Picture 1 (cartoon, rainbow, N blue to C red):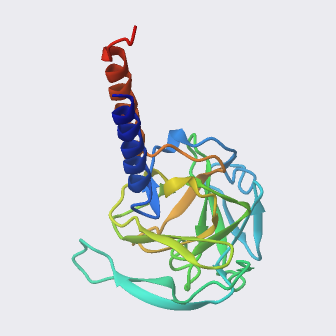
Picture 2: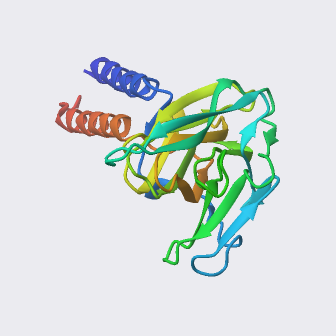
Length: 255
């Protein structure tokens, strides 16, 4: 019986490990992340203020820019869904090229880099990429970030979403892609993702989109160096341990 229990334990641990390795990242609860929050509140102090940010931005220990060295900046246009007249917005496109090792951040052109807006609510300020047509469509640009140290999980708040295409690309320090997370069709709110298996190798990200009207802003970025439990594998492991405990209690004594 003891041998069978040990075998069952090994199988359960193996199944949990396999579950954890099934994808590069797993979506987790934003509230499960423990770490400092980058709120951008220092960029715009008063409600409904807007700030244009040229050059690289350092906020909360994170460095922000438009793209990484190796990513080619292009433009693409997309229609605004649901409008009677065909209107199109222009967006930054980073789909050509790939970041080089070291994740060297680059700023966009003056006036077309980053901006901050104070929403006048409890969450306050948010960061946006200006985009290829400053003044005509602020918020349509790319946002890239490099962390001081690689992390195993990150979460952020998305604002001004209108159901368009959004991609969050997560990178290692050597420039290799961990995963391009599809956030298309999401509503305003918080999202969070953890590395499967707890690997702490997320060194930065690029956020690109084709979301119309007001573009996309990010707020309340949280970085977590500690592994975050993944729902499926955690439940599997807990259930297995409970089963083992029940079996052990029912095992007859050798006295």
